[in-house]
Structure formats: C-alpha cells, structure tokens
Image (cartoon, rainbow, N blue to C red; front, side):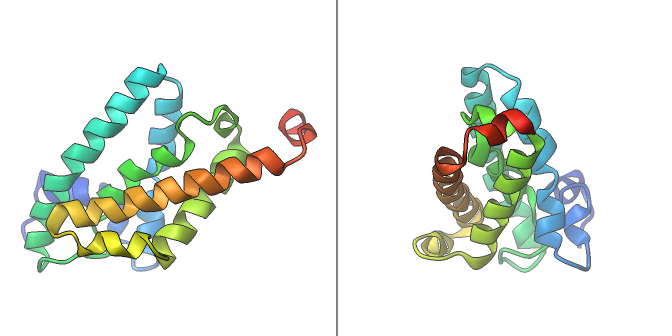
Length: 159
C-alpha cells in the first residue's frame, strides 16, 4: 500500500484507520468543515461543497484501487465532504446540539443505507463511493428539516 498524500486525504488524515468505527471517527472531520461552510455566503458554501465532492470522486477512486478496488472502510473522504450537505441552508445548525443531531442522523443513514441510498453503490468506482454518502446526506437533510420544523421554538432560544 502506497502511503501518499492521496491516501492520507482519503483516510481523513488517518482518522479512517481507526480500529473502531472508522467511518464514524473519520466523519467527525466533516463537522468543522460544515461549521466553516455555514460561515460562508450561500453561493461560496455550495460551490465549495460541490467542488470538494467532485474532487473526492477521483481521490476515492485512486485510493480504492490501492486498497483492492472496493469502498474500503478506511476511505472516509466521501463521508467528510458529504456531511456538510446535511446542514447547508439550515441556520439552526449553528447551534451545537443541532449539529450533533445532524451528525447522528447522517451516520444512521450512511451506516444502514436504506433504499434508495444502497442503490448508489451500484455506480462504479469513486462515483459510487461518493454518491451513496451524498444520498445519505440528502435524506438526512430532509429528516433534520422535518425534526426542526416539529420541535418547539423555545428549544432554539434555550440552547
């Protein structure tokens, strides 16, 4: 296995090498990325997020080939760049408890991959590796938005 810059980026600076829950540990790097993107203007945030996802496709493809050609558990760049999609455009996500809730929802859908999320893995290579995480983030966004709509307004003032 070649330990290159590509490898370290794909493994989330090594966080994806955790012996326990590497996807979840690696996904934690998506939180500071999401915080930073939320501070940008919406166009800059969306363009940056889109560019990172596009760049993650060949990155995940290259490292996947080094590791045997599958969506290896240590590859977490896809989770990192997809997580911010859960909170983009959600002003309440600037509250730590909402960000934490978004992370838990995202990990739930990313780990279980219910339909139609699991179908994205049928796409080959880096596209499939990134696409299932993007779909998990999209479903998580919808669930988060619905939960925030139903939660009492006082929760947003209290915390």
